[in-house]
Amino acid sequence: MANKLFGKIYLEVSKIKEKTLFLKAIINVIISVLIIIIITLVGVFFRETGFAESNVIIIYIIGVLLVSTQTDGYFYGVLSSVLGVLCFNYFFTEPYYTFRVHRDDYPVTFLIMLIAALIASGLTAKIKKECAISSRKERETQLLYQINKNLLKIRTMEQIATEGSRDIGLLINEKVIIVIGNPEEKNFFCKIEGEEYDNTLSEYEKNRIKDIYNKKEAYNEPIKKSTGISNYYMPITGQRDMLGIIGIVSEDKIISNEKIKILEAVSTQVALAIERELIWEEKQKAKTDIEKERMKGNMLRAVSHDLRTPLTSILGATTTILDNYSMLEGETVRELLGNIYSDTSWIIHTVENILYITRMDDGKIEINKTLEAVEEIIGEAVARTRILVNQHPIKISIPKELVFLPMDGSLIEQVLINLIDNAAKYSEPFAPIDIKFEMNKEDGVFEVSDYGIGLPKENVDKLFERFYIGDSKNYEGRRGTGLGLAICKAIITAHGGEISAFNKKDGGATFRFVLRGVIEKDE
Image (cartoon, rainbow, N blue to C red):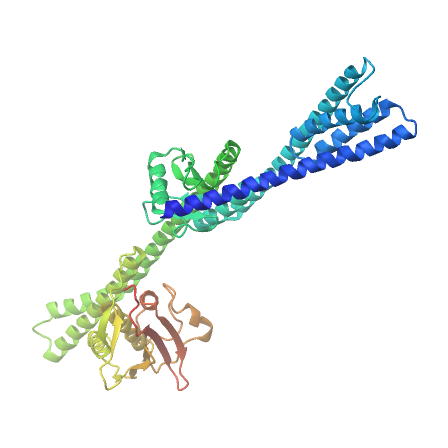
């Protein structure tokens, strides 16, 4: 059915083209005849006023030149030359108004007049053709310059495919397709006339592009009689490897060699643009890797400094117990063991944060959302931080009914642990910590509040940056690593939520994060 439909469309288009060409030919003939008629009338005027025959011959040659400039093709100049000789014979040689001649030199005159007219017509047609070619080449050069200029401004692969296919299509007046990367992989771009190709190309054409990429050679598809479509594809080759495919999807006609040559010239510019972008991406990756190494070095130095104090405390407490075990009272031993437990819990918490941040940098943390009971997540986080905040009573405010939210339970639990630990550090001993949860339409809102001196207004925006440590007084007396809040932001952002911090009116700070209450369709 599709082939029959395309066949009918092709036949209709062919008929329209044939009618157009026929109409154009009729117009050119009419122009030629009208010019010869006008020239003949002028010649009659010259004859009646006594001008010589040579003057009439000259105006007929001028008429042939006019026909050549006002019509398309060499044929009409030849036609006007023949008509001019015949009209000169009929109207201006004796006996008048007949094709007979009474002088023996007239045939030679007619022949010379015809040859002169044909030469003039040929030269005029050639000059006109050269002017057209020159004008076209000038336009192509301007467009090539514009394409090259546009490619220099482009910064992404998708823009190269989008704007390149559109600009080159304007240059050669065809549908141009650009494929960047391997079509069999996910990270490739394919555009046709600046638009997505999925809704334009058939499965056959998509498979053809994949074959060309694998074979790495140009392909010119013969024109199909049923559809009248001829496609031409060629590889975009860089200095090191094949970068993609550029091609023409031509309808109702065979692609000319001239357009193929233009496409080959432009493909070099596209290859340069792609390679420039690849080099830029490699530099960015190298820059990112260097930054990661620098951050890992900073992390190692920060952690080494922060771990020294609790490890020294643990070592001192265990040494005291081992050396004076028989002399120590039970309450003293319990206090020393409590200190060891507290410092060990802090070290474990710090190491967990470091593991989370390194896994995030390596892209190894995956968000696996399931419906979790909010009450259980908060309860587990409070239980795990009890030893860290044993001097701070925790007040929990949650709805009476059981609430389920889509989340990765272990990660949200880590967020709450970090926020509770942060609240304890920057609150006075025995100051309460409030944990609140409520539903806002379909979203879940979590808040962790303290009663400390609050957040410095000028540095609120930096709170969630890595290695940032607040200037406020740390009542725990222990320097943090500056990773806890950065981890919270990364986890909440990965969940599609938002996290923020602000000062309370009655003193202290509140950290709030919001989770969507609806599981996305792609999950």
